[in-house]
Amino acid sequence: MSGTVVIYAGASIILAWGIAHLFPTRSVVRGFGEISSDNSHIIVMEWITEGVSLVFIGLLTGVVNYIDRGSPVSSVVFWSAFIMLNTLSGISLFTGFRHSFIAFKLCPFIFTGSSLLIIVGSYID
Image (cartoon, rainbow, N blue to C red; front, side, top):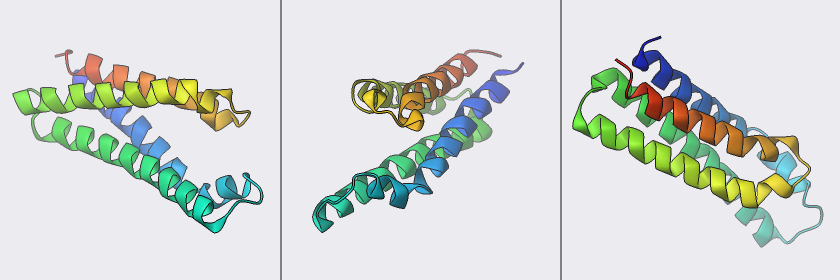
């Protein structure tokens, strides 16, 4: 399997996970029960911000892979995505992983798995 395909797989997974974050935002906020309007807006903002960030990482990685996978700039983008996704994985592991909602428990695995596909794919010819 070529590195290009492996990178696209990692980028697609994280892109899809980011899009999936955007749809349940209202139900996530409702899951907190009775909270202030300010707190509700903060949760919405943070939930959407994470989703949009994941979409951006997936799109950026895929576009850079398409334009010129072998360039030094591409390498910086792939490593930056790897570092960011693993940072998010660590945050998710120590925060959301304790929650009973299954999607929170999946985040560390999806973030780490995608990051590994992206970085390993960048080294496959």
